[in-house]
Length: 499
Image (cartoon, rainbow, N blue to C red; front, side, top):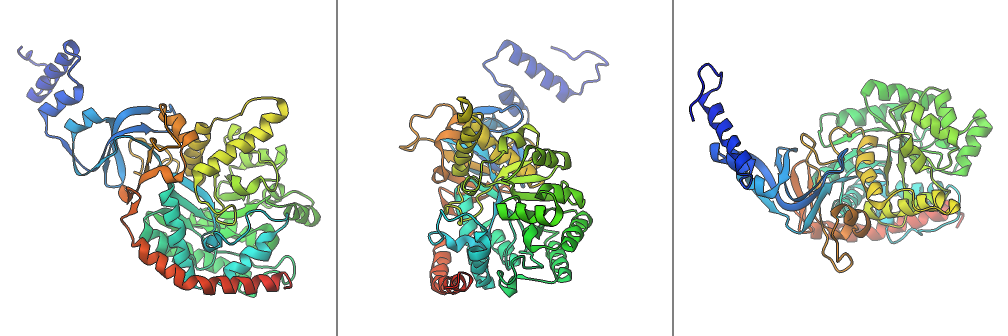
């Protein structure tokens, strides 16, 4: 075969064309093998080999016996493992035969400082603002080192169960949260507990109340301290309508625009909050936010439980995002998550922290969310579940990424996206037999099935062992400090409950 004159082809182009033409007549030879014979393998930093890949992309692409190539912190290739073997030369290869690869999940509402309430705080309680009577008093007794240790414990728990990013609700000593997140290797958005008034006259510890000016300055300073960190950064925070002045709400919204960040808040969580806005402003919480001009894409609203259909319309109109904390929310009321999804609202799942059943496992939160939506939208009409387990898990990935303003970077396994990857086993006793990887992930997996977790292209947990920190040392430190933490908690609770 000779090259035609004036064809415009270089010798390499001609040879490549000839080789690819051979594939057409000899389909048993793969394109990757042909190209691999013409050029040396491309270098990459990490090559994950042999897993079934559930991408959760727009087409719900699933690749059996696949491979993922990572360079730096980005995914540079996905395909069949047989092709990857000839195409890539990796500094590190992770053998993942028998595992399922999926995107890391985002916990869209988490209280780092409440982590040591795991195994202490009751999972069921009377209705009412218990956060003011128990949770904030607990936080008030924590020192900086306690919050740092709390972060280490919470973030390792997240990584071990498939969560690669968290959105902090707002707590004490946020810089210590950031320090812990960096050490563990998780992606996150930290924030400061922000209250500039006491809505019940003396119910909050004095240490939790700032002046309006102080609240704005400290929030701004926190965001600026972390603005150059690619993995862990800071958001602004408004604790809740009943403990924030209107002046702070409006000025915090202006500050969010100026700093190009989001405000994390609690909204429409309890009946007391609805009563407060109706009594003081003659409208419901979302209406009030819209009325004063702060309801927009920079407002991330945890819980958002007590909503009318008109309230949901306001979320869609103003592009506010939502964290649905299924472990906690159904104690309060049915949740309109399905309505939100249908309207394209950026809604993700959140654990809310150990005050809500004690687990940070978003697989389980996802299961609860399916059941809650089935009870609300299916059973009353003698209908089947309105959403599948796989679709809800996809929402935990894609919806969580969108709520955290990372939708173009995380939430699915695609070329150019950040390499936040979770590898899950599917041959445990409580999973066998599992044939469809997407259904298996949605229905038959929980956190302890996670084998490896990768964040920003780095293996953080391998075979359930952490590579980033000494877990035994961490646990020893926690055990040493724990008695004093709980003693302070009991004293604070006694004061708030009149004990």
